[in-house]
Amino acid sequence: MNFVPFSKKQLDVLSWWSPSRPSAKFDAIICDGAVRSGKTLCMSVSFISWAMFAFDNHSFAICGKTIKSVKRNVAVPLLNALRDIGFDVNEKIASNLFEVSLNDRKNTFYLFGGRDESSAALIQGMTLSGVLFDEVALMPRSFVEQAIARCSVENSKLWFNCNPEYPQHWFHREWIKKTKEKNAYYLHFTMNDNPSLSKKIRERYKTLYSGSFYDRFVLGKWVATEGLVYPFMSDDKMLCDVPEGNFSEFAVSCDYGTVNPASFGLWGRLGDTWYRIDEYYYNSRVEGSSRTDEEHYTGLCRLINNRNISTVVVDPSAASFIEVIRRHGKYTVKPAKNNVLDGIRQTSTALKQGKIKICRNCRDSINEFGLYRWDTGGKDTPVKENDHAMDDIRYFVTTVMNEETDDFFVFASDR
Image 1 (cartoon, helix red, strand yellow):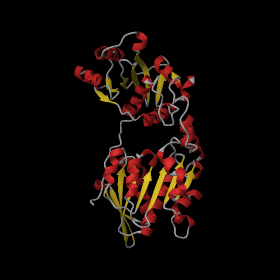
Image 2 (image 1 turned 90 degrees about the vertical axis):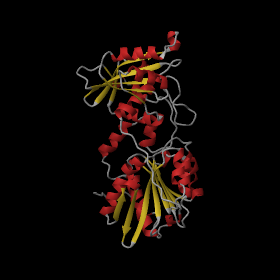
Image 3 (image 1 turned 135 degrees about the vertical axis):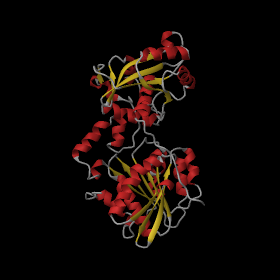
Image 4 (image 1 turned 90 degrees about the horizontal axis):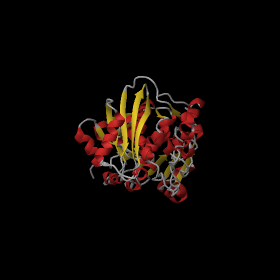
């Protein structure tokens, strides 16, 4: 691994725990701020270095949202860096742990995924000397607090990093706003704190986000979502005509409704881009009558119009409609992934990068782009109105475009 000289703030993270530093008095360190600001690698190297300096034959935990993400984002670059700077590393992949040795000292580091509320039970019973939380704002509070409770060893320390979320998020309220009470050392990062990023790359990241996501991920601010969810879609340049050429693949995304509107999108792949080339949108309130599952299935078939469809992805709550599609045996159907905020982030990036494009004939989805707004209640949730095409587009991005999922596994030692 090729290291560039660290920034002043990265050096601070690397050495804050050193007994010669005034910051060594703190029980925790919190690093938040912009994406790609150089927080994760310097924090994880510092975490291991501190553990090897302060303890021998002890256990530690490194936690991410999922076991896959913590391996990808933390473990892989960390282990390469540790080997380069002289540590001996013994990976035990099946057990989700690795052992680090230096001279006559050895410590064990367990990898955990804190995906949902049930994850808290999986870390119970361990005794830890320190925990590193990567992207702590994406983890449930119960999991984080259970992991913290495992750190009962004298001189143990807590390590947190994250990108900002909304101001009322529990971690912002309970830790960042209470650093003095928690005896935590707080550092805020921007992209300028990462010397490995060129000016060109920094500018590219600035073009990927807009609105509240720009404030959070580029400026590193804890701000509330407001206004349109996809404000950039008001620019006519974001739309296109149905392209000419032979599509290599077709897929359909469905947000099902009987009282509420039903929205189905037909997608065609041309090169590396997916185009929404047609849609079915039925609003029973406007039309004056509702449709049955079979009638919506007839509408689906008309939309597809004998094309060879790779998959039909459907709102996971629409069990009866999914069953109708399966029973007919004509199309492969799968329930969509339905994490709303992650899906909106992925959809926003896909639209801005041109990985998906909306064709001008898809009038109902274009209309919803101009109406789909954030709820002003303080959390990251859109208003549940004018969201049916928005949901089916999100289902397409998360379930068809981004097929790879974060599998969830965890390993814990016996009591």
